[in-house]
Amino acid sequence: MSAREWVFRHPRYVRYMVREFSCLFIAGWTVLMVWGLKQLAEGPAAWAAFLELLRTPASIVFQVATLAFAAYHSITWFNLTPKALPLQVGESFVPGWVVAGAHFAGWAIVSALMLVLAL
Amino acid sequence: MAKSNKPIVWGPFAAGGTLTAFLTPILVLLTLLQPSGLSYESMHALASHWAGKVLFVVVIFLSLWSAAHRMRITAYDLGLRADAFVAALVYLAALGCTGAAIYYLLRI
Image 1 (cartoon, each protein chain N blue to C red):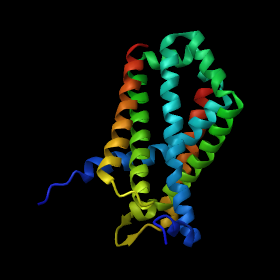
Image 2 (tube, rainbow over the protein chains, first blue to last red):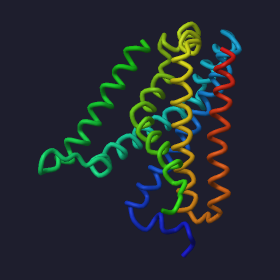
Image 3 (cartoon, each protein chain N blue to C red):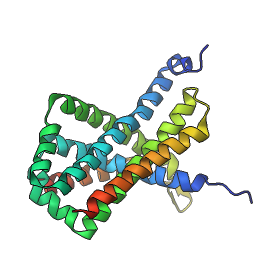
Image 4 (cartoon, one colour):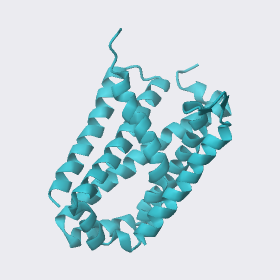
């Protein structure tokens, strides 16, 4: 068996790899934003060209894929929070769904806030 | 106690993982929709303010660092055993891109 075949031995491993590959899209998109800063520094015409670039079919496909992978990263990250941040009150632990739920609620609030600020 | 650089590498990974979980989906949605907040005037005003510059650098550095750390671990999982080389490559790339972002921000 080759070093890479283990990934396909179980759906759980495939999901793990999908999550890990989200970083390629997040990194690529962030580098694209650094390019945006360069264009912003060069003036209004360069910035307009950058927004134009973001509207080309290829970059729309890339951004939609990034959005999907980034959302998958968010969901897996927040689902892990009860394990990463077990919250104890008195003698007992706060149920895991409360810890994860609070993070999902925070995610919704942050996203709504950003959307309102940008409109 | 044995010295380890693990916390230095892992700390920004955890911080970046949390930051990207909260922020990246909505930011990508915004670059797709291009609302008025993405106009030259708004973006230039944001990037001109020192607080805006700090915000850009923090988001860019933590996003790139956590992605770099994941790439390193994934490369190892996929059978690439040259960990020191991969680590140097991905972390330096993250630092280099952050350096470029700082350079451009200082020109705005």
